[in-house]
Amino acid sequence: MHTETQDIIEHYGKKGMRWGVRRARQADGRVGDGEASKPSTSSMSTKDLQAAVSRMNLEKQYGQLQKERQPKSIADTILKKTADIGMSVVTTQATNLANRQVEKLVKAKLG
Image (cartoon, rainbow, N blue to C red; front, side, top):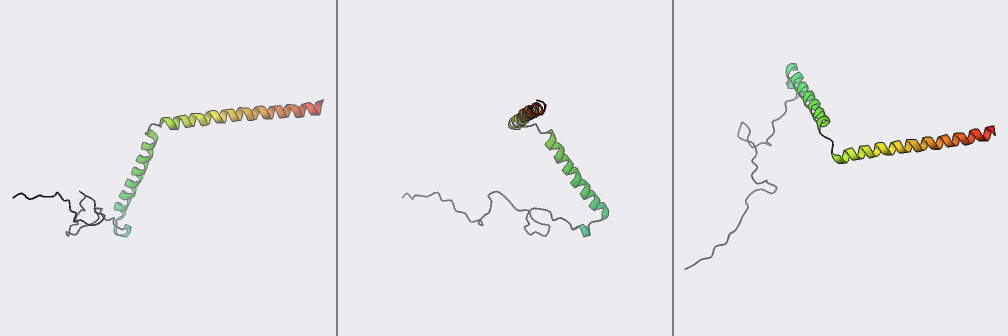
């Protein structure tokens, strides 16, 4: 006697649960959100607070330096060059137009 079996996948997890992601357990065994809770500033000593602020400032400065070091994309370079050329052309044309207008006014006044 031969019986057929069907391959069935059943899911017994919670809605919105991510496959393969486990939530961290707290020291008391409860499941937490995986992030360490931040101490309130009133419970921190002056030394701890200074160390935290110093660390945050260093991270901010490091991020700014990393942005400066990143190579510019080709599109950004082309856009900047195009804008520079455009400004040069506009400035030249505006100067020429102003000079012509001044010449016309001078000629009208003098002769």
